[in-house]
Amino acid sequence: MKCSGLYRPHSALVAKPMWWMLVCLLCLGLARAQDESEQQALRRAVELHQSGHYAEAITEYQTYLKAHPEAAAVRSNLGAALAHEGRYTEAIDEYRLALAAEPSNRGIRFNLALAYYKMSEIEQAIKEFEAVYAIQPASDPERRRLLLLLSECYLRRGDDRKVIALLDPLADADPNDLTLAYLLGTALLDQGQDERGALMIQRILRNGDTAEAHMLMAFTRMKANDKKGATQEVDRALALDPKLPEGYSLRGRLVYLAADLDGAEAAFRKALALDPNAFDPLLWLGTLLRQEGKLKEARSRLEQANRLRPKEIRVRYQLALLSSDEGDDQRAAALLKALIQDAPEYTEAHRSISTIYFRLGRAAEGRQERKIAEEMDAAIQARDQERGRKMRKCNQ
Image (cartoon, rainbow, N blue to C red; front, side):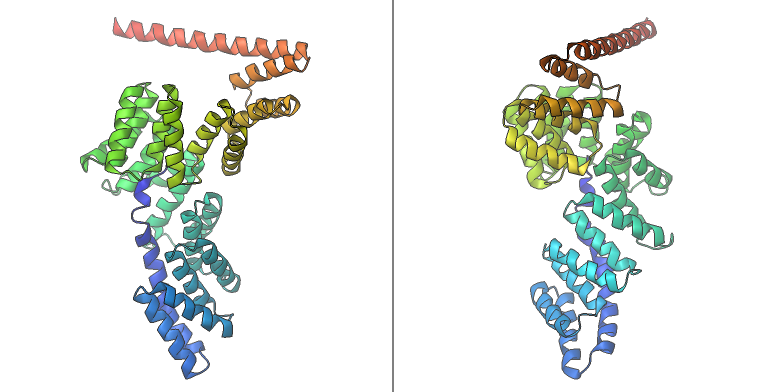
């Protein structure tokens, strides 16, 4: 799940480091300018940038850089202006060129990470945020914001333990930090630390009726198999924040489980319209499309999800089934065999590869895998029965 709270103040997070660079640039650029006309042109570019005339500032920066391509600070400011206009690919190119000249400039690297973050290129954002984190002094006033951004990226990648390691030591320092509470609460609930996660929910609820609180409540209810209650909480969250991609993603999962496939597809597509690189809706939409026989788009969605999380078992499983649906049982069997080597406890993989082995005429291997799946099912059933006996005993 992705923290919507980080998106609303995102421009504020960007503004401070970019503004600092602008002020420095004014002095630096004037010192480097070769004549009075260039000094005036650079001064005008900075003034346009500071006054919010970004398109005009971009033109002025580009003109200056034609004569002074080595001016890293000017190039970085061009990246900042481009990023403000949503031209992130161009901004990234400028930041990279600036970093090639000044590789230790953490302000430029931070802005590069932000540009990747805004494009939902999470792996690249993590790489650059981690590089800044490694050299940023602990006393830096931007430290906490960096931790939140890095944690949000870890959460989107599924690295809950890293989120907890970064944020848990800070949780009690500022109980009113709702962004931290949401990120940490989500990670804790993902890891089954329900009691600690509930504390984060309470912190958010104390600050009023928020979309974040309802999303955490929805997640908690879903874990308790209360699908109706979870759906109600998601709907409340979306009523408060209709641009919440993780809300649509979770709603899609809930209606999918209720066999409303049209409603699920619409919800997943809405989530992806808001965040094209969100892993969960990519996985679930790809799964749904595969089951409906829409194999071409299913492959596109699942491969995109796989690029985001190449080690994720669920997407690897769906890609294996997709290969089988496309008529390539040999490839499906190879993919499932590799998956089982990495996750031998994945019952469905044993069951599916058994079926495929029988189709391929490999009956002995099919029987072996079917036996493994049956034994695993029996073990799960026994654990569930034991848990039920303990609960009944406690209630007597």
